Length: 441
Image (cartoon, rainbow, N blue to C red; front, side):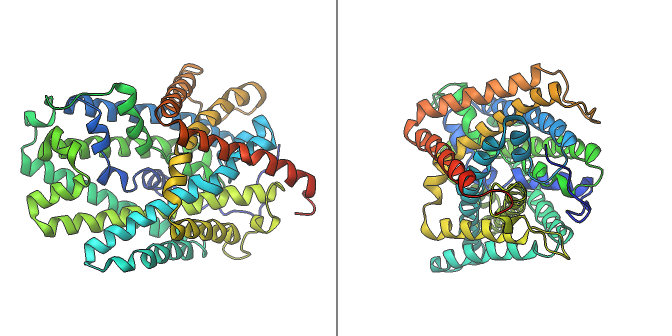
């Protein structure tokens, strides 16, 4: 068990507001603005669709409560990596970090940065040839602002998150005020739709809630973490659930269930129907800001995982270094950003993300199992303990396991390649341990 961060390590400067906005910003990216149609296609009515959004949100809240206790027990940089390494050994931690670097965080960042450029082009009427330069420029920008201390990055992230919440509010108000709030259209069944079952519709919705784990990666920079981490996770999740459910209600109120199912860009369609092209461009700008904030969080939190791995000798020692003045892992941050840019430029990020998206939730479920290990082996009495133990953790683990199984049955090729990506880390780990010792990394 490694010692806590030394005094010359990270600076604990993130308060409750900063931490809660990180939770919100890490979950709400571009998905809620453009992809609820998939879940609509797999349900038979607006009521069943909203039920699934609420159920997925509550399940994610259960996972967040488990992570809240883990964060209170180990408020250090690295999050899941730290918990897995302590509970199951260095290989488990390495496999998480390996997959995180190779595809999960980097692939998510590359994919969402590409969404940013697409909406930025639409908002400002720019030529399509600027898509890749805008994507790369966005990643360079969010990397640069975080090289000069967590406070600078947090202030800008707060602005990103508040603006994206304002975009959600504008969408909801537009949908409810101009389409008749409370109309039966929002909840009515669609005779033309035939649902594929709860699990099939639940999967894309659950993926929209991923990202609640990012705050734990920044545990070494949160003030009074034993109290702040649980409060921020709970508050952030309640905001996200409310935003997601209300946004979908607005979609249904304006477009109807069938219209939402057939819409590739429901937020733009809602705003265009009410305000014309000006409304569509306005929401495009809001989505661009939302995606930029998401990229900011993935890079910042992922860099802390790499830094913790380097400190433990499971990655290059250079990534463990913190800037002497700003106390930020700048080498790790630039490395993750550079790999994300490579994926974005190669165009392979989408396929990689498909291969490993389910692995992100699988990692969440495995991480939650470490709570049982801590309850048995850790004598600490944290200020927050996940309620109704062991039933809530078991509920989360079982539900995510079912989703993973459904994913593998639905698309065995992508799921199989995702598993291979994780397993490929085993020989890499063994070679690393053989060639390097902590003193030589």
